[in-house]
Amino acid sequence: MYGTGLAKGLLLTLRHFVESYADDIRYGFRKYHHSTDNFAIRQGTKTKGVITVQYPDEKVAVPERFRFLPFLIVEDEDHPTRAGKDWCTSCGICAKVCPPQCIWIVRGSDPNTGRPVPDPEAFFIDIDICMNCGYCAEYCPFDAIKMDHDYELASYNRTTHHIHDKKRLSKPNSYWRGIAPTRAYEEMLARGTWEHKDAAKEARRGTASSRSQPPRPASAQPAVAEAAAASEASAPAEATAPAPSVEGATPWSEDDAKREERRRKALERKARRAAKRGTAF
Ligand code: SF4
Ligand code: SF4
Image 1 (cartoon, helix red, strand yellow):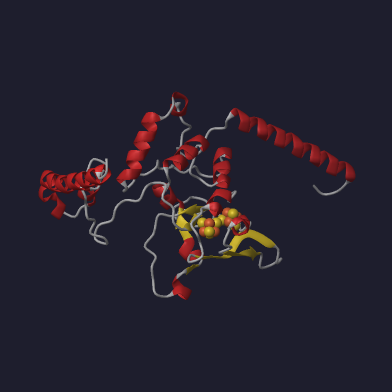
Image 2 (tube, protein in one colour):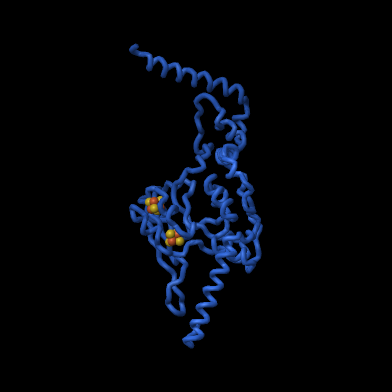
């Protein structure tokens, strides 16, 4: 019948309109108390009606898998062995895969020998060209570049503010742990640590002082916490099997031990061959 859809739409609008007031009454005067908790409750999944968010005084939490611009991970300042060190090795893969080609990297070099070193001397991203695809983060073999949640980047000066340099792009690993989506958290559990691969390897070998790995911080964003809880509740039985410890050094797995044994034997063979030839190993 003509007009049925129109009537349904109007009824829905009317319902939202009425529910806004009903929810306002239920919520009471707490809306005048600008604390994060109150706002999170008000903007939670159970809220009904149409809500006006008083941006920029109030901000709705972004979904946990929201991604905006890439940032580079550096070690936390309190890291026992790698404080402030870049995870990026300036391999250039992210710059190669970036569809609009908005990444520039300058590889560092040893001041004495002039040979390249795996450290970026400079790293730039033109944020006006970046299309937020996340390819760079997907392809980085060292997990050194991730997508950020920060979306408030408007400014009037394109040349100085919209070309992010290494300093502007670098954020500590602890920041990444705070915003990482549930999938990244699960990946970390499977790997046993949030640490950089090299630091994890050192910790396993016991050559570095093991650092207590704080678990994923209870996020300031309720949506993230809710999603994590929901994911845990709905995860299949095998996914909830005891996860490897994330406390500091991770124990050797059988596979790791075998791999290390093979590596040791290969090195011995190589040393024997070098000795036979009389060359340096
Ligand atoms: S792919 Fe990763 S390690 Fe390689 S240059 Fe890009 S951020 Fe650095
Ligand atoms: S998110 Fe996409 S467009 Fe932006 S820097 Fe990474 S690869 Fe390039």
